[in-house]
Amino acid sequence: MCRSVWAGRNHQPTMPQLIKGGKYVFGWTIVHSDGAILIPPEAMEEYSFKSNDKLIVMSGSKTSRGFAITTINKILNTPILIRIKQFPMLYSFKKLKNGYIEDSQKIYTWSMLDSAGYFTIHPDILLKYYIEPGNKLLVGKGSGLALAFIKHGTIVWEACRHPELQTFK
Image (cartoon, rainbow, N blue to C red; front, side, top):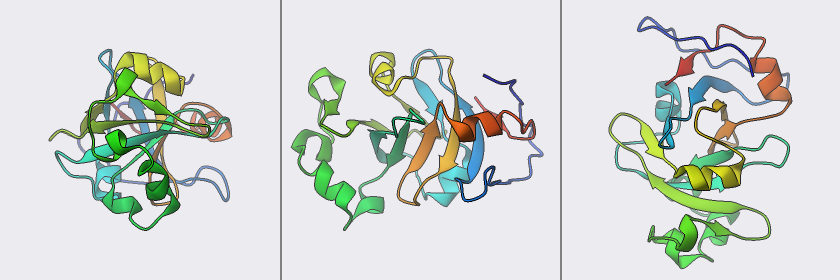
């Protein structure tokens, strides 16, 4: 991919738009060996994520790969919630057979956010999103309903040209 940049404590938050008309990004995050993923602090604030939130994880687009996360409260009265309600085990955050649910359009799972801003997806399930431990994902603002973790595509290639983007571990 591209080289990592470690952000120090004196980081000034920025959320650049890398491509005209494209997503705004918060920086990079690294997938740990156990599937733990850190949400950048600025994204935590922007999406109002809190410790112990239950997160819905859904696959991203076929071109960008990756996934997006949201909470039930963020998607109230949206078609996304109507779709998720079709899967009672997912909607009620129960243990899922095989750890995920797949329909004709998306792959879903869920995770819980810890007090440090990490959530974990089992490495076997990460493979369903074309992600492996050690991958570097670009964290971007989606529609405002879900936070995107992007693996591939034009925006990732453009982000590689921006060494000022912070990497969160």
